[in-house]
Image 1 (cartoon, rainbow, N blue to C red):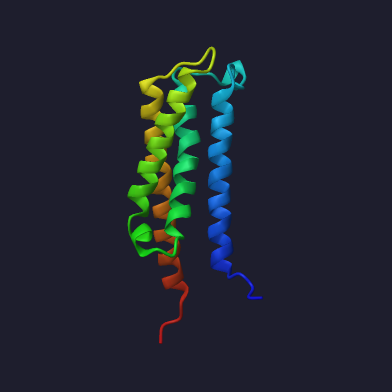
Image 2 (image 1 turned 120 degrees about the vertical axis):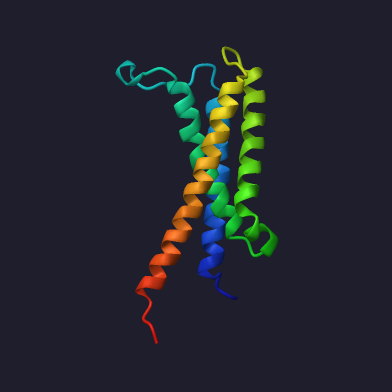
Length: 142
């Protein structure tokens, strides 16, 4: 039996992490009163900051899950696809919250989620570019 390649295992790991993280978001959204930081950490609009931070991780994971695909179309359009999928997931999450007691569907949350997805995907692209440039600097010249 052929041993799975390192690339395959990394791709699988990113996809599993992405699904687990999206599931965690769903679980937290299902709580009528999700956990909140201590009062001394509260500042105006912390809720929007939390949404953006939460979804930036999702955007990062989505990008890596897609860019590691074997399909060239997915690799080429990984940024756009990760943003689209992340924003759609955010919309379904906000819609889901409409039906959860003590929760509301809020357009400002959807906006913060979308900015978070965009930021997370951007950071993933920047990291790939940085690592690629670093490898070129380290590689010996012939």
